[in-house]
Image (tube, rainbow, N blue to C red):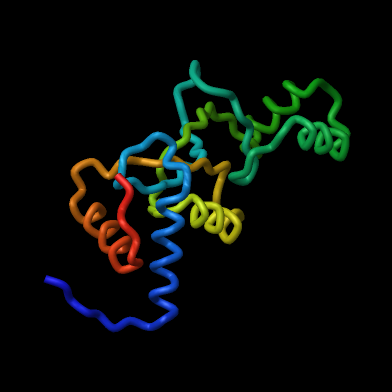
Length: 161
């Protein structure tokens, strides 16, 4: 049974373009249905013998150049380690070990096209920390499978297998 639906021309154009993009983009050797997600770098506090030792001041990382500059401003007489230890004991700095991992974050989105991922990067780069995108197979996800099939049908294009 065929059904006729009425949609705005702009909506039809969007669906047609989306369908075309989905079917012509590189699927990165992933079966359909698939979607894209973004991972970001996340810092994790780890035990003392793991990760990289990092110095923080007022909740922000401080690198060695910034600390040397502070040493000069304060006319501190000694080496950088002595300065760090003095400031830690004064409570002005703290030391933590961190490990950087990539993971899907709480604000992760899904995208049907790589083009949309890169548009998201452009609009949100100020909120993203070293993002990288992945293409994932929607394993046994009938909702995504049927949605993508509907997009192709409405666009008048036959879905590629």
